[in-house]
Length: 303
Image (cartoon, rainbow, N blue to C red; front, top):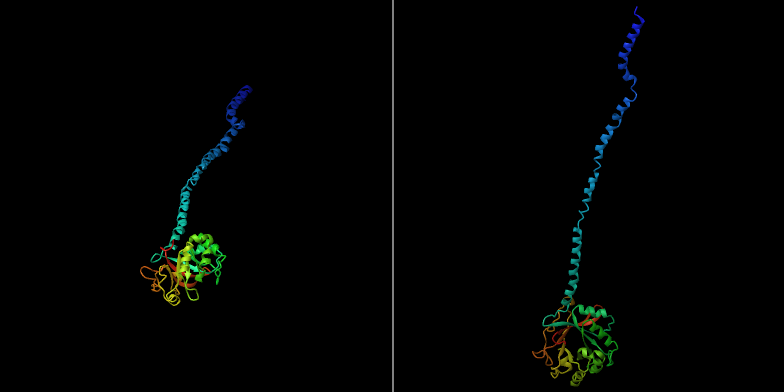
């Protein structure tokens, strides 16, 4: 039998050996928590950091590059537009003089009419179509009484750029015909003494009377009328001739030429020294709603 004291000594020795090896499991309360922290936290956080590097999405600042793309180049294109407008304004202005160009033999378009015209635009249109002289009947038809519309119509013609002249169907009404022009008498190119079927024969007194009022006399007649009405007298060959020889000419292609048709000699006119200064070429042409006669005159005769 082992003595009691020895037994106690052996038990104590065994306790000293066993307890150190068993202590880790018995006292393991705070250590394991320390090991848990690294597993649960740091790993994911460390992985999130690299993801945050994608945050350099600020690199989308390159998208600001589109701003430079709409550079000022579109503005340069807009600047070209005004330049194209300039020629358009010039074209009509350059075209206007063509309407007033002289035809063959230095001729210009002339119209004569007995019509009442109330619209100033009509005269402007006539000028635009190349007419340069307006000849109007200036007395009340069938009388020697000055027509009340004479001055108004002469003014509209002048305002449109046309030159003016007057006539009366009866040559003996020359004085009333001229005085009807009133303040526009000094601007009359001439007064035409009308010698045709049904009118009074012209006299030297009439010619001189026209001149006495400061107006040039012109005789209107034709080779088919003068010889019969005036016995083909050559006594008036010193007075400029407004001839007549009409046809159904085409207005759209009409070019003024006071030497067409070919001049026919009568009354001492249409020679080298007494060539007509004008020719009536068409009766009763509708010019923008107004019946007129078409004529060609020598531009050199007009003042």
